[in-house]
Length: 260
Image 1 (cartoon, rainbow, N blue to C red):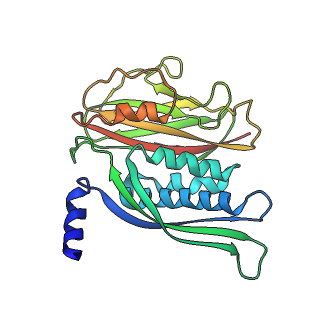
Image 2 (image 1 turned 60 degrees about the horizontal axis):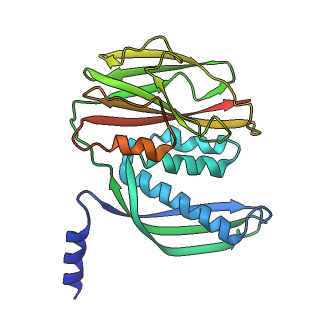
Image 3 (image 1 turned 180 degrees about the horizontal axis):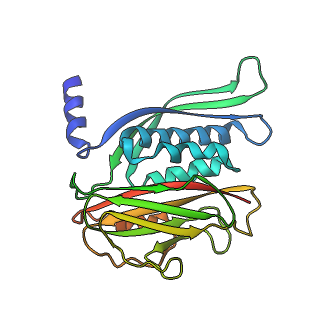
């Protein structure tokens, strides 16, 4: 019977899917969260950790660490989980362990969840010689400071950059193509060979009450020119366009913080 079950699992899992076991933990003081809410957050953290573990270098360690510096840390965690799904998806998961209560010798409550998740990478046409590196001049900005982007490419490729402002409001919770886009930068030459340098001015959103916000840039390089929309209503809408299996494409993301 055991041999039959193993055979069944091997041939029903999609190609390149990986079963990952990961843990997420949420701590709180017992005032703002119920045990159920805390455990829900812990599970979402476990899912994020499963994606990170499975997808490896496609997720920047800088992006992962930024949440501890942002007001509304849980929302930042959710934003990252949503962003990471541009490169992979959790098709199924099950809880295999749960532990909640008070930490020993303190008034801090916690919930810790361990899950077993099936993670599938987004399948795109690949070429080891087709890649790029995108860096920002820094990770924390005050409103009005310049955000500088430096991109190095291994060969000629078409580049598009999208900005995601996930914190809501009437005009912010959308994904906007900021390059090539004359409204944001006069440089609209999207066929890049070698190095591309861009500069944008940051600003803090007026409607938001937090002292700090996290924002994201999504970099998409492709072998052929793609007629992107100027805006996408959410991450899912953009994801549909990023999952083209027959087009050589590389997707990276980078996060930064803006202080009021």
